[in-house]
Amino acid sequence: MSLLKEAENNWDKFLDSKISKYSYLRNYDFGPNKNSSVSKLSPYISHRILLEYDLIKDIKNKYNSDNVNKFIEEVYWRIYWKGWLENKPCVWDNFISKNVDKFDDMLYEKAINGKTNLSYFNFWVEELKENNYLHNHTRMWFASTWIFNLGLPWELGAKLFFEYLNDGDAASNLLSWRWVAGLQTKGKKYLFSPENLKKFSDNRFVVNHISSKDLDLKDEFEIVNNKEIFKCNFKKSSEYLLLFENDLNQKSLKLLINQYKKAYIIFLNDEDRQLKISNKVIEFKKRLINEFSTNFKNVEVIDSLSINSKLNDIKKIDLIYPCVGDNNDFINRFKVSNNKTIKNLVRDEDLYSWQFASKGFFRFKKDIPSINNFLFQKKRLW
Image (cartoon, rainbow, N blue to C red; front, side, top):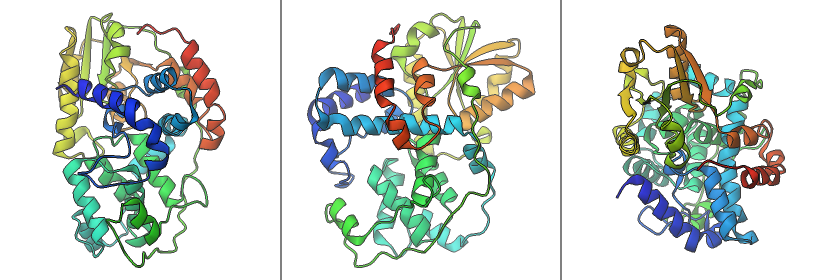
């Protein structure tokens, strides 16, 4: 079964039978081999195999009750995180450029290999590496343990997640770690109790005490807004198109891609990555790319080492905007060093939603009705 079909089937099952129970079961992690209380769709959503806005429309077309609103809100959290980082890309730039060199090397090695004196944390490390996935509540426990119990730099923990998570997109992963650390919402960091761990792990992890260091982390740089992304649109301007593996939504891209003479899906080689990813994550992404490309006669998959030769004689190119992150940094470096004109194609839904995401989520939440209206009023081509 293709990953697209798998994603659609999983979404249909969740929409039909699980979404109504999501609000009161979502915090429970019953274990990697048990039925999940959540959708587990994030690997597909982060690559836009499933588009966030389509999920929202599916839910609203099927249900007219408040008991599905919590899942809709969680989808909007993903949209919000992405929009927040688009408004403040300097947060990503600082994360990538910062040299973290003051930490306990031996403890760090124990942590990334699941060899600490905390059995529950060790279990999560093994689960992360084995399944390339963790339940969202477990990610919060993991990050809190990493920062406030082990006392390791949050940046290194975020990079560990980027390495092993199939859904490790820049916005959700980076900003969630910042939120746990108390950087995203000033004065609000995430700590958890033995009772919380016992209850929501379904009694799998029972401890008498959880030690937390009294840390008050602060940013060492100024966070400023950048509105450049809002100058973009989704209109074709070239005969050639570039895209990356983190936006492979066939439904919304099919008509557009077929208008181009040639489209290239770029996959970054290790040497072009600022963040290392594991072999299993590479395999997952390559499978997504290869399945997507087989649906188009004019799409070619290339690695980042061959982009120069493929685009040598092409000066003007369109790009399905990959959002703030490693892919976008790569294409910006390529554009500057090769004197190319590259136009970012950004969906109208993204631009409309992201304009409300420059402040906190609860301010953004007030504008969700307006975004919903936009989604249902907009005439789509797919």
